Image 1 (cartoon, one colour):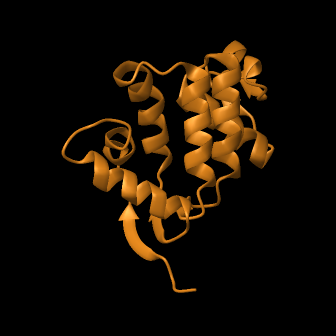
Image 2: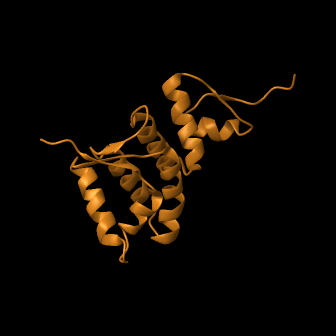
Length: 140
């Protein structure tokens, strides 16, 4: 089998256009199929997942569970690469879907769990709801 074709960093709009019908849709769907089959390889930044968690419910009217399933499928595509692996981000998607929390908070909670570190935040209760150890900043 040949090496996958490298496409570089994947932007949010590729995922959104793949779900619509416009001049870019067919090419974006083809790229996502290639990523899903391991024929193409691209890097996914957590910022893109965050943006998708915001955009997909607003643009496509998807509910949180549908968005979470889509984000998980993206993360599990053989051609999608995530620095440090996808485990923390898959965990973040689950925490986000389950709690209704902000996506950035879910990522922090997942990173805290993966590294056995607490989250330093004013919103200790929110982090506890996400299953993370947390503490508030202390004055000197």
